[in-house]
Amino acid sequence: PLKGRGRGVPPPPPPKGRTAVALTDKQKLKLKQLHWQKLQSVEGTVWGGVAEDADSIDFDALESLFKLEDPNTVKISQPAKKPTKVHIIDLKRSHNISIQLSGIKLPFEAIKSALLNMDEHVLSVEHLEMLSQAVPTSAEVEKLIAFPGEIGTLGLVERYFLEIIPIPRLEQRMKAFIFKQQFMTNINKIMQDASILTTTASQLRESENFKNVLKAVLQVGNYLNNGSFRGAASGFKLDTLLTLADMKARDRKTSLLQFVAQELMRTTSQVKFLSKELSSIKPASNVSLDVLKTSMGDLHIGIKQVDQEILHASVKIDSASSQHDRFRDVMVAFSENAAAQLRHCQEAYEGAVASLKEMVHFFGESWSNDKPATLFRIVSDFLAMFDKTVAEFITRQAKQDMEGKKKMMAQMRKGIKNQPSGKDAHLLPTALADPRGPSKDVLAKPSTVVQAEKFSGTNDDSASDVESDLSAVNSDVSLASAT
Image 1 (cartoon, rainbow, N blue to C red):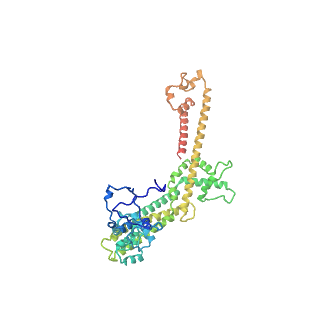
Image 2 (cartoon, rainbow, N blue to C red):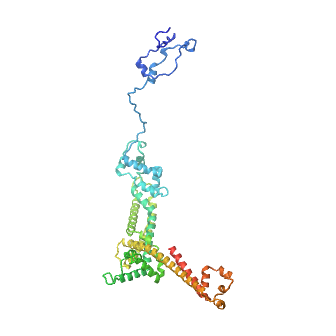
């Protein structure tokens, strides 16, 4: 019988021939455990014949490999070691330049070669503008030249600077290179703006329809202002045109602009084409003479700087000025052509200014550099209001004419019903007197012609007149819609 119920069967003694490895509790806690299932009986098995020699195992090595980590010890991860780079340039500046260089995506040798050869197929204006912000200062150049270590240990920006340092007058070269690539674009823009200003000034001075508008406004204004200090005016400032739409009649619907447009359309119907005569007024209103003047000044300064750099390039400045530097060859040819282009552009600019001054004086205004743009904006805004008013007048007039024609035809239709019959039927048109009704020829005619012939009797001219009137009304309606 088992004693000590609940305690279980005690483990068997170790087999003969085996030596137990004595480990302290402290050692057991230090080592990782091998999880296995122990055999209770090994007699007659391979295990019974396995001899264990404690001296054959290096337990010290085992313990060092499989000991447990102290839970109270904080494990500090060691970052992977990176090759140490030497940074001579300020880190923030270096970071910004690195971003710019990554945007160009060219080897440093290719950038240097393109700068020496002035090759605009390799370096665009965008590239040059980025590189112009990545030019080493004199202090940085001194530090880089004095660096005693290996070039490979330097940072990316430092290595780029060392590559381009030998290029003579690097900063000035880049400015000249950028100026060369942008020159014709700037010239064409100035020429275009000068042409628009000259054309618009001429259109405004020579427009008879615009003069008719000013004359009508002056007459209406003097009539309204008769007897006051505003009366008997010889002229008015052009900004007065923008106030016409705000002045309402007694009916609080009709504006003074509507009245003027109505009177002009009654006496001078060609005034409806005023906007077409002044077609360039809107683009001209967006051109600033001050900006144009500044652009011309920048071109003159740029040409002078290019010529100065050509003089510097004529002399071998240092050992870096080698035969591979094509700055002088490229820029001499450019300077000669640019000077001629600039003279032509200067003439166009001065011609535009002269035309603008003449225009401003023509309309009785005082000259200032911003006055032409101001006048152009005034006229452009007025034309928008005037066109809308004229279109509304044409539509309204066409509708009234159509209603008048319809009313006249209704009256004529009523009169035909009272026409003689029987022996007096010969007085009616043949088509209407025929008791069988109108012929197929009559039915095939447009309705406007049939109506005209019905009410015209034997007078063919009257039918033609009515048809022409209807066509004219339809034409006016179409023109108003198109406007």
